Image 1 (cartoon, rainbow, N blue to C red):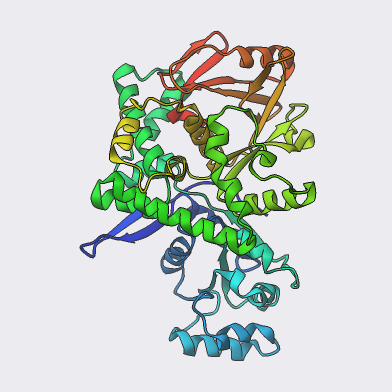
Image 2: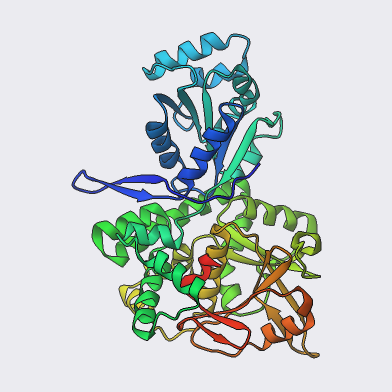
Length: 462
């Protein structure tokens, strides 16, 4: 079971002076809903990429919603603690040992036990089935899916486990972190009433959005920006996160092929080839091995993958062609840093020009990556469709959303361009299946016939 509602959560980061930032996150309500609906009948696994704040989120939830909690960080837990879950014949002893070790009293139906980085102790995950059946306490797990899958080959995955997917901070959460709670409600009203914001407000909102593109949604990067207002310092934080990802990839594949696929994403998107060609990055790898590498990359949650829909309809997964894909970096802030990886740091002049929208480069791929991130964090699966225009050219619709019995096609523009030839051709070809149609661009909300010209900062509201 996967929850798709979105509300609040607090993520805490220390300021240099000892005070705390409280980042509101929408996943908080998903956890509250799980607790309310299940009343101990299932555990919940919060999964996602590294450094998105899973552990902090879960602990804050435990502090606010339970009388007491024990957090077992399996990166640090002793072998004695890990070995507790090898033998479940005496649960009373296990609970007494945990209370003694962590100096915390557990209260029946009022306490939660957190298995942090559960992939480091597979037997603890297997034990969830019996711990949940025991019924005394609630259980929350966190983990990175790529590591979880690696360490679950020889255990039984518990059916008493719900799943919540977590992503980097979305644009609304980022605006909350900047102290702005007004913008997104205003944008919702504007979209619902089809009321343009005006050129002056549009310029302000685009500048705010470009800041999000540069900083990104990784909580550590956002915290660094709030502390320093220095984009070079933010870039250094993002580089550390990317190096952590590359280290993780090498643990999975010592040849470094997964890391090479990941690093090639910005270049592949910037070339506008219309799809990701893994064989152009890594040569001499068989189809089965390449598929394993791509699955591992997807499971890492560091990327968002859009698959080609061969027969676009409301049941998009039914026509999914997994051999044709477009791959995006899961966090656009990380993508900006990765795109300039050849420099020791992304010079402030580059950041300044990007922020002012004056960088002399084709930044369309950055906007496309941002749209993918915004759609994914809003709970959408990603699909695209391409078909021949003539012998040398193709039409392509960048994203397809399924809403009720209709499709919502989306074409992304990098600037103020208003042409939408591919979108028009798609809507003509599949006219009976089309609901709303969108061109995402950088100007104010307007209509061009039946096409909604949507400012990119409104994408998460579709």
